[in-house]
Length: 452
Ligand code: PHE
Ligand code: NA
Figure 1 (cartoon, rainbow, N blue to C red):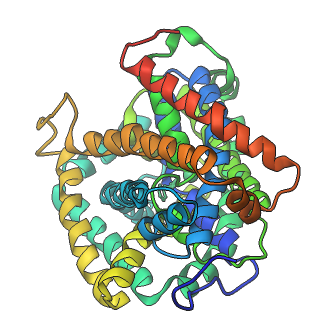
Figure 2 (cartoon, rainbow, N blue to C red):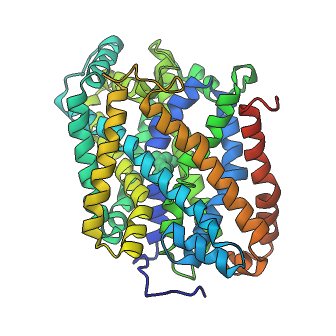
């Protein structure tokens, strides 16, 4: 058993951790980001690299993060520090916890904005204003929305307030209670969308785009993005999984939980791709249109289908909920840190962190309108935060975590905590060799040091 300084919160129900971790993993990453990144990076080859990254980097690291959290039973900084000390390593390893916490926090600053778009679309759909609209009109509607910082700000503010309220009240009631009905609802609606897409006339083109590997379309940046997205979509190196792992009872199987969460997450991303790309091709839309993709394709489909306004409304409600179960997990690391280290109450911590997130989110809001030309390294503020977190902080944090867990910590700690019998050796060697090699190769290739 891990040493604990004080009695620590645990998930209430038998499925508490599983629901919370799935809630964290499944979100805008699957339904908004995965399709548009696949579109920007040329399709199938990107998808294949992404799947390989989930398998060789994502799954072993998710197990590691849950293990770190549970063994350390604290916020990510102190959890990593405690486990490192227990294993005779330097307490400086806590820097891995810090990087993760920072990533999660920064991600929230743009995630809240996009969750806000989904909120706007609940109303757009419910009002029926797009019913029967042409693809052009649907595209213009979204474009006009993005050009209005005030409207983006209202929804962003609402998302930040809801997120911080749930987190301020404590995770158990909010997350545990809602993910259980939301996920199945989401899956049912996605399948309905895939069926619609199947009859849209673009199904074959869509599936070909998604699953045929055309390696000539892949670029070093595309490969790095696939790796970054594997981290993003599984909520890794963002503090979330370590923080949630800290509340995991000792008798739960880390392996089984990880595999189920990773499977659910991947299935939902692929379903989203299968719903979106056929519609893109059937309507002659752009695959590479970027962050707006989801908000143009799906409403285009809803505009034409029977009961489209109704389905559209339900769909975007689900999307908002899926985004919220992710957004709350992004600040849990910071919440745990300031409550444990500074002794702040959760409500106080929620107000202060919420204000900070909200201020930083203004940078993302202006990236789509008045600040669209304010560029650094050729990227807008939103694109920089996205790049910094997904393409730099997360892979680097994951690399350090792999080294710590597989090379530095004594086997008796990891083997005891993971409790996975014979398969332990597999986890160990994948994490020792394969995971770091993948990350290092991808970095080296992005930097132009090697080519493949
Ligand atoms: N995994 C979430 C998604 O795919 C995003 C996320 C990233 C959540 C980092 C928590 C931490 O939408
Ligand atoms: Na995800």
